[in-house]
Image 1 (spheres, rainbow, N blue to C red):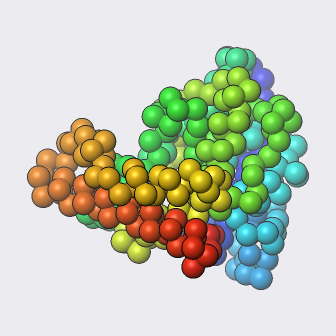
Image 2: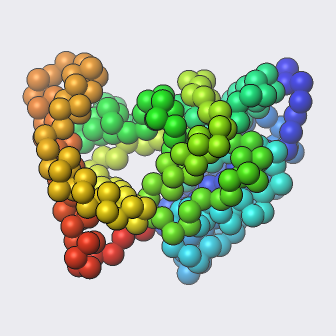
Length: 292
């Protein structure tokens, strides 16, 4: 039994993703933590996109943020948050039924922990993972590794309210990488973050090459917006080198198929080069950062 039961805030940015958001909200209805102690802010990042008829729980509020970007949307949610703990997830995620309770229990037992990076379990909508989906299952959301480098992704990030009071909100000018930038600032301030496998949300694997390319383009824009000189330098050096580290990661995943191992390696390399090309296009003013 949880000794202390604080009010918590869940912030979910969404952009033209109402069907998957509905599944996310359904999962939040099933939380073992009392609904009366949970406030949920869904932030629509396109006010021109009217939400379809939805049966919302009493603790759910839909806000609208016209500034493009999920970090601008999250900041609007932060400005309205009353919770002692701030939970972040994405509209395409499905939190486990004990997601909130598990995190609250950890914070109560470990006052030194200021941020939690929870597990993001990649799942397939099919009976078995398609080849493209295997890419996400191997490379996406490696939270435990991210924490070792001082950051985490907002698909499953929980922080004490005091963290934002100390270092401020996300950089709303970034289309990608704002979670990394904010967490690195928090790490520099000494705000302890730990990874917990039992604080889990599920995330669908991207199941098409188009989706992987969209993500790579968005990542390129975020990297360029954050630090142009370093992004350009990376794109002309490491960005075009064969990814030896990625090959080791694929082998460690034990896909039990040499063919899949080789295909995933070249897919990773292709996406890496594609990211570099998009950085070049941004540097030459031939493209703009993508919000998707």
